[in-house]
Image (cartoon, rainbow, N blue to C red; front, top):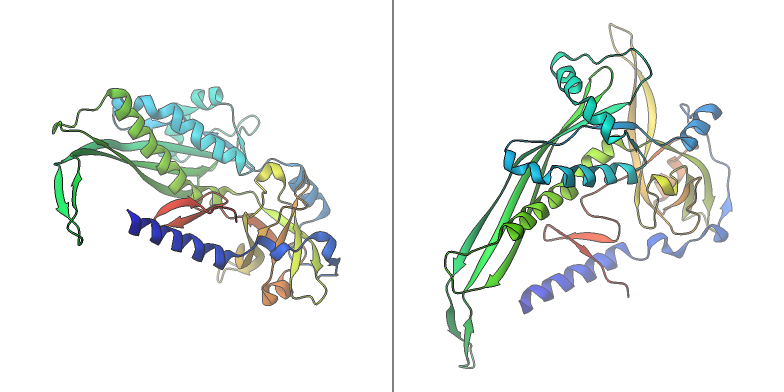
Length: 348
């Protein structure tokens, strides 16, 4: 245990040194607005206003399906978890009652590729989730005795370790076209140990359900980052501010507080480019990744936030009207992945 703690502490210190202070303590008052070139495919004033007043995509989150009737007990908790993550990413989730009413129609549309188009558009995207499997097991370890280098005797008590693994399948479609956006596989796990001499490792139903619920929660947390990235609303770069020697910059983006803007959140920058498909001569729009930065604490409001960038090449590459999107990873803001787990780095 002592060795494990040393390794964990070393990893945390290393991570802290690598990440440093977010924004290098650069604040808007320490910078000056500078002119920046406009992107060729920058949004129109109307498009920008619409984006800033919008609520991201309108999403139908279909009631959670389950492979085994025993897993029904977890469906609402999984639904609420995914729903809250979608809302925090700046999207709007259609009322649960309406989603339930549309369930059969959406399942039929998934098979036929057609969704009713009459009347007002109820949403832009539908997400279908299924608990594929969630189970738990146990392992008994007998008491053991050992002697250290100094000749001192030690005892490790008999114990039972319990573990659970969960797997979920998630599908996202555009509607009414039912064009598949992507399919996702969420996997998670949970475990705990308890001292006992009972080799059959008894566990209450409540404890077993809690263990499996934690595994499903870990699956949603670990897997939903890719989904949220695919569905993150597009925001835009609207201002550049440089420090005295122009070695560091802040870029104002229209990622507002309600869209998930918070200190330390990663933002990726993209540029829209048009391409002509040979033979058909059809115009297609593609986005190319330019780089990334981090949101600073100062300036987060209902209109947007400032993103710190210290990469000189990226500073000179970014243009007004380029796309900015929050990057949703496995770990939450303020957490770092250490040995496959999300760990909060302590404040110093």
